[in-house]
Image 1 (cartoon, helix red, strand yellow):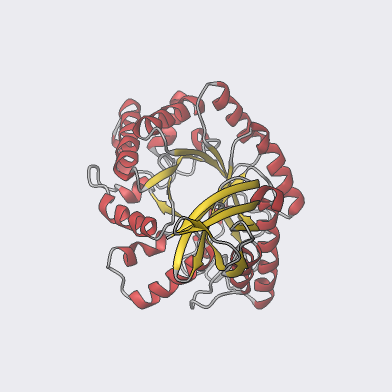
Image 2 (cartoon, rainbow, N blue to C red):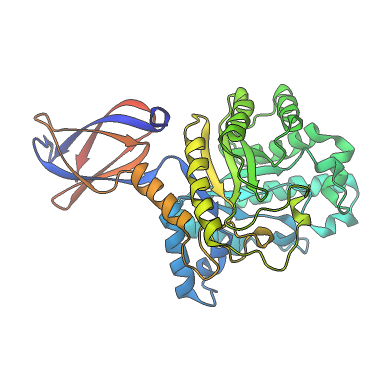
Length: 405
């Protein structure tokens, strides 16, 4: 893992224009380059000053920042714009700015999806639906540019044209024009609206069908910035062998990989015969002590497996707490009562201890150089209350200079 995630740094420090020779300084990592992500849906009220319990939500936000540095916010069309022409832009923009002001990049999810899509699309013909979809992408990507510069552009295209749970406008269009033209349409709109944004293709289908789609998209000249792979493990932990096999298959395109939706349970697993996870609806799905111990071990194993692969750039966990968790599953790092599970403490130790550089006293050499091995990301050096900051961006050897001011 360290070969891909760390740098052997030599930082020449100066103070008032002179080399800082033989002095003790405090070195600490302030941010990881790797994106340890989670949904940020639950902080919209806190960010907008509409929280019913701001103290509780502030505690939850502190827990969130103890693990994560990257947020995903919801752009499900049916909720974002349930009435045509009345999008929820300002509330979500304020939420995105709340994260950005804390130094956390934000991703929007998703711009195009056949599920939770706008019901009013059914009143339009296919050509009008396609035009509305493009206009929607142009508006959102443009309105949020500079605050959100990463998007799951289209979600679950493999199943999109054959989705039959209920009628919807996006499936109609995808069935009409085909998967690859659909991907081209939405990616072209997003790229034109924000040429420098990071644009993802995202899917839960880890079968060869997704590989075929990716190959077709790339062969058609459509530029994909990163591949999104979902890993909701409601039916049990994948294990290292399956995870590594998935990584091997999807790394052959040479694209950055984001694990966009990860869930590992601390309760009983969903029965294996369930095909669509949404079909499993039960009244109570408790977290158990045995399940929490298992979850902590599996979280550690999963994150270590992903960080060991050089193409993985981000892991987004799909909900920090059990309260409001998708499908009511006990998949969070925090119980419904707000107390942390063992998995929280385990990941906190990994992210902030084993994979980070907490505040450490270290001395410069006779030429004012600071030498250390550190995980990629942002660093701060402090000497007598004065500071310098620098960034380790690439693995291997890194030679930098920083002036303490």
